[in-house]
Every structure is written in C-alpha cells, then in structure tokens.
Length: 276
Image (cartoon, rainbow, N blue to C red; front, side):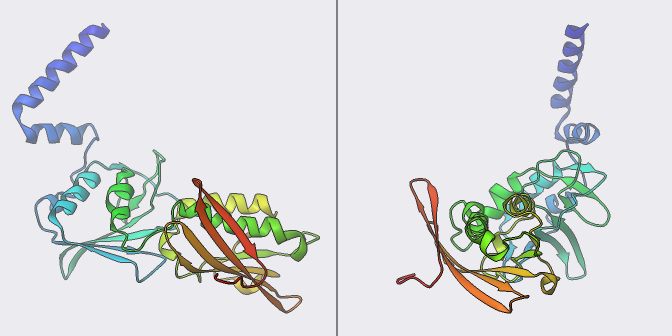
C-alpha cells in the first residue's frame, strides 16, 4: 500500500513537471508551500523597498537592486500564512512602494523560529517567513561594523555589572530595579526583540525583580542606564549609569570589552581608565 502511494505521488510530480511552471506554482499554492500575495513584486510593480528599524529612526535601508528585490520575493512568496502574530514588538518595518499613494507595509520580527505564529505581518495577514531574510538580506545591508557576537558583549556586560555591584546598591533585594536601554542610540539598531526576551530572563536570574524599563523610568528606586560609547568588531565601550532615587545619587561605571581568544573579555571600572 505504501509503495502504491509513493508510485502515485511520483506520477503526479512527473505530470506537474511536464505541464509547466504555472501548474507547479498552482500546486505549491494548493499545498500551502507558496502564497500569491506578493506577486506584484514578481510582476515588477515595486521598484523600491524601504526597510526601517523600529528602534533607530536613522537606520533605514532603501533597496532598489533588482536582484535583491527578486530574492525578497522568493522568501516572502514561500512564507506560510498563519492565523496569529508573534507577541513581540517588531524590529523592522518593510514598505513596498508601487506608487506614492500605494504602499504595502509590513512589520517584521527578526530571528523567529516558531512554526505557529507569524513574524511578517500587517493588519490583514500574517506570515512565517524563512530566517534567511535576516541572514541573506538584512545583515548584509549593515553599513556600520557591528561588534562580533553583539548580544554576548552588550547584554553580557550589563549582567556582569549587576553580578559585581548588585549587592552594594540593592543589599536587601527590596528596591525596584529597572534597566534602561531605550536611550542607547548607538546600539539601538542592533537590539532585536527575541534577544531582548532572552535578556529579560537572564536579568531576572541575575537579580530577582529587575526588569527592562520603558517609558516608566521614573517609577524605579534604582535605574541602570546604558550608553554605548564606541565599538569595532573586537572592541566595545559603554558607560553604565546607576541612579538611586532614594539616595539622590548617580554613579558612572566604564565598560571595556575586548574580543580575544574567541570570547569577550569584559572589564568594568569605577573611574574612567587611561586610554579608554
């Protein structure tokens, strides 16, 4: 019985191949291996695609290269339509411009690997698209040199700071602690929602009750703010400011990270070091 099914499937595949590409595309749509919602891209109606970071207004790509636009079509047309979106803030907004008054806009959450929720969506539809959109399209467009293993040095330096100094600024563990990343404009373009979720989990493990601060920065007894000062692929510098509302004090700490022997070596100084 199983052999008969395989034989019939083989016959169907041969028939599809012989009947032409159009029939194959229809079969792929029927099997939900392809969607027809982005055919306007394939038809050459889109000459420009704008990709905008949601966390850094200055981090904006304008795609006009026809080969890249074809690659985007290939990734999006094989996206699986799903019923719901991932419950995370989008990392990018895509705009497909047919004309000045006809723009198709979608939200995108990078790095998603969950089958049942969409990471590319608008108010009408939601799709789960391949992670190649991150690796082959977006990451190749970075015009600045991103630090190697950015999430390791960025989030790792904050967690190391809390592990080193947490007992001194919150000895009883009763103060509310917020970590403010929203004002770190130098690194905003590299912050992604999925990585933030991992950081939230690790942050709470490092100090119970510590959370990411949003627009509620004034509500916390302790506010830890991060400002990236500079980076290359193997060097990272930042200033961590510790504000204690109850004491009315503000202290600055200086972070220096160097990528050596395939890992980040993180040092934190209580005063600005020479040649920092």
